[in-house]
Image (cartoon, rainbow, N blue to C red; front, side, top):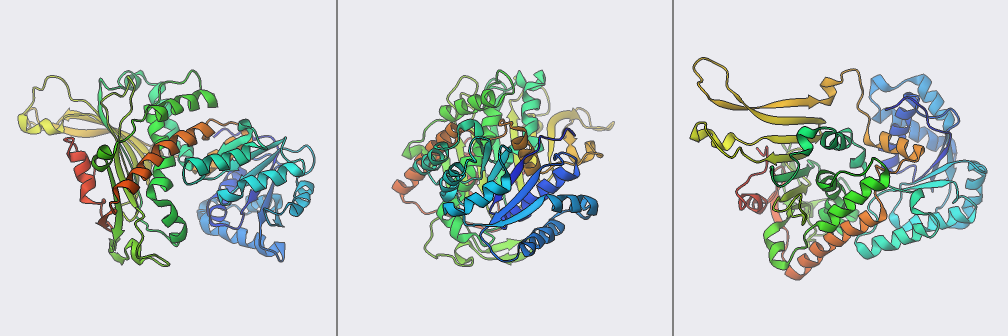
Length: 489
């Protein structure tokens, strides 16, 4: 990150005592302060419903900071400076009578960033109240996902925000877009002719996107059961990754140029018939198993669960893009909870050479793969074929990586958390890492057809044992096409 500090602003964090704020947002703001990227006059307002002594709530924020920050990065001088920026205000978010005190705390003419770490159902009400006290003109609003649960509800939320804030002032967060490796997708593709000239159906056979979680519901059963894995992960994170992989080169690096190309990809996603749905999409729900050698309950046995729930905790699907670049190249998407390991990666499979001259039994090794790892260790690896070493090996082949591992290659550089980058870009007024309204709508439109198709088919999700890679039918989904998920053990 550049060491040039941003202009002064006031960042008002709605929902400041929630898990997201305490675990991610305050540590990210601290790191920006520590890196010298906050203007000395930048102020932070922590807004929450809890009343009582403000010092108590500021102490809660301080204790969580000390819990979540790595010990070597905890600097008492920075902490003291950070605490000096912070003020706590107790307020309800929907009644308008609380907002004059907020306007007074912000001050006239000052740049305000209003971060909504709240349910989307209150976004419109907060925006109306901000506008009523004159806090609309010089304000950027940051919206956390999920924005709605389908196309109609997402439009309702976005329209409620748009009644007071134009699109140029709205920043919709998808934290995956702030990851260093995701940002590198743009540089990797468009700054290297080695890849961009090969980035099409003439040279690529298929693409995999996997976002696997080892954890279960973690006490969020009430929220998750209404959403499910498709709404919670596919509609935003995985489709955003798909867009960045599949989009054509933008005219420049401006926000709208990049987002225009992503929208073209979403528009080109092939709709699914009922027959294609049963063949190309797998829903799963985990049952009791083991994780890290310890027994874990099934989804229907989690705390506060409903034993009749048919909500999916796993989705695997094949998506096809109807355009010249990607005709005939399937994109296999897979995401689930209670899987074998925590893993987020993209695998680009390149075609084999047209003429094979090596030992027949080694033919299955042939095929370069570009592996982009988002977590747990951010890295980019190109699997290439080389001759095995040794006088007795003949022309034996082996597959090995040309690898860029961020943590080892850039030893002196700390990899910033995604929220650090996203918060900094909001302060800079740069929207290219944020999701535009029409992106949200096209993603929902494609996902809604899957949800409607499931309802019509009436098939329950397939069971899979916690600690595995999902239902067996998800393996059949890709093996039917003569392929296999990369790296499954």
